[in-house]
Amino acid sequence: MAEAGRLVARAHAIARDMCQPGVRTIEIDQAIDRLFAELNATPLFKGFPGDVPFPAATCISINEEIVHGIPGDRVIQNGDIVSIDTGCRLDGWCGDAAWTYPVGDIDDEKQRLIECGKAVLATAIRAFGTEPSWSRVARKLMAEVKKAGFSLVEKFVGHGIGKEMHEAPQVPNYTTEDLEKEDFELRPGIVRAIEPMINAGTPDIEILADKWTAVTRDRRPSVHFEHTVGLSSDGPLILTEGVGDPLSL
Image 1 (cartoon, rainbow, N blue to C red):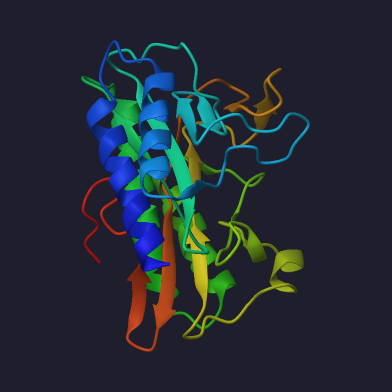
Image 2 (image 1 turned 120 degrees about the vertical axis):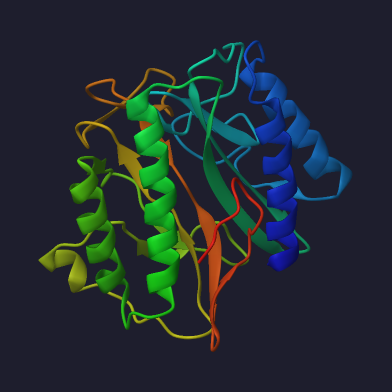
């Protein structure tokens, strides 16, 4: 899984460099698709089932788009924030990661949202190695996002990952009494895709006509940060280390 994670980090390095004004989102997707093909890796997202099979190797979501944006002819602009999510299977094992990249000069709200997203992911990964159960981690995430004045998306969650991209259990970024009945223990040997999605305004979402792209109902911006993380007896192992900015824990 670490090998797959390193390849996902290489894909994100391409994405990070290409997130520039004037670049079409399909160009980023094509570059990442070529990388996976060259190294005999299978893109996890392409063909993923839904009302319409997902058509690309990456999800590229801009500004108010939360997740599952379909790459196309949209041109990235100065001031955009671009969330890129991609994953691959290499030698039978999966890696999956997302990061939100600022383009040029972004406004204060977007900057604060990005900083919050990175901090919340770091909090989750640290707590993954210290808390006894996932619900205790989720409580920390909820408190941190609330303090920042933003909202956690509840419609989409993280997940177990291994030989398949989506394995049990689900990994929500929030908790309730009902969810805590399905809580899971944090113990060495598990691997989870931890992926908080944070909105500037309402947590409510809408799905666009393409059947995939999720946007904020109030059309305020959103960010998405994800790492594939294993838990060893020595603590968390970021299997997609190198994605986005360096993450100090």
